[in-house]
Amino acid sequence: MPRLLSKLRLVGSALPVLILALSLTGCFLSKAQLITPQTADYPIVSGTHFDSFARRGTDWRSLPEGRTIHRQGDYYVYINDNSDRTSVPFLLMRISPGRYIVQANDTSNFENVSEYYYFLMDFDGIEAIQHSGSCWPRQAWIDEGVISQMERTSTNTRCRFTDLDSLTTVLEAASGYTAPEGKYVLDAGDSVEGP
Image 1 (cartoon, one colour):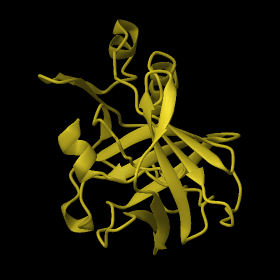
Image 2 (tube, one colour; image 1 turned 180 degrees about the vertical axis):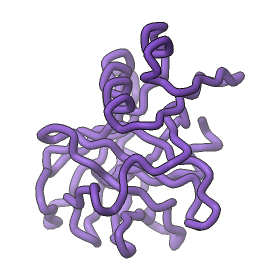
Image 3 (cartoon, helix red, strand yellow; image 1 turned 90 degrees about the horizontal axis):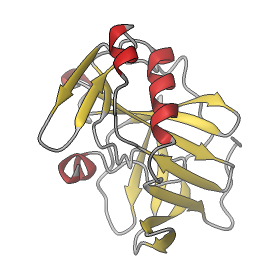
């Protein structure tokens, strides 16, 4: 998880994906894009800054660096305060009012992408809450092909998907079993297009 977190430092910005915080633990993934620029939603205005928070028990603690979300072509990226490095590209897709799936590339080089990582983001236009969760597959999901492939590693279980509906089902179920990982709050004075 720490290796992937540093690789995918995306979410930090409010929905932003919020990305990726991408704190994508790498538990939910696909080989092919399940969200494309044509099916993505773009609720964050380029240049929007978010303050970042991490879990401390049941509370949130402020992190020293926030993140600014930018659009680069059809994708979002974020840049942490006091840095000039951009995150990996990511997309958002609204699945219900105020709830998004975040899809992050595993590299910034589009020709070398081998996997896409996913997590949920709840965003009310001011505050984004990141839910990465863990993939604890139900046997029925495996039997019915909801999860196309499951891999157990020394640190987690990785579940591979081939369609967005199956991914959505499992992400929403998993979000109910773990506490959210990150929170991003819009700076006063910034605006977004809306959830």
